[in-house]
Image 1 (tube, rainbow, N blue to C red):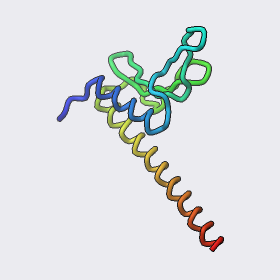
Image 2 (image 1 turned 180 degrees about the vertical axis):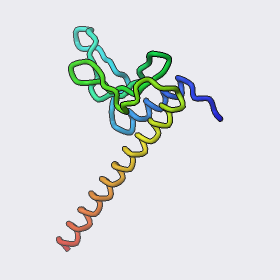
Image 3 (image 1 turned 60 degrees about the vertical axis):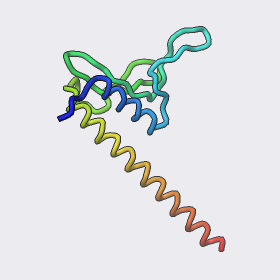
Length: 110
């Protein structure tokens, strides 16, 4: 089996942020040069010898998205993959619903 590295997990998190339309960095600087959180951004959190997927909250702080706690690299990688598949599935369903609505509107105006 292929080894799951921290870099691999970081790339998964970056891709997750890209498919959800989020920024890729959890923090930015405001006009005064102070750090601010980028709400909704996913990030890799580490501790106790493992990792978890966290999401930045508005006003600071973060939440454990998958409720896994800190787990091994492979377990987290699999969980992130499943989470991203669910997001893509919902995006596809939304696109299909929008396309169907547009088709119905075109038929009604024809």
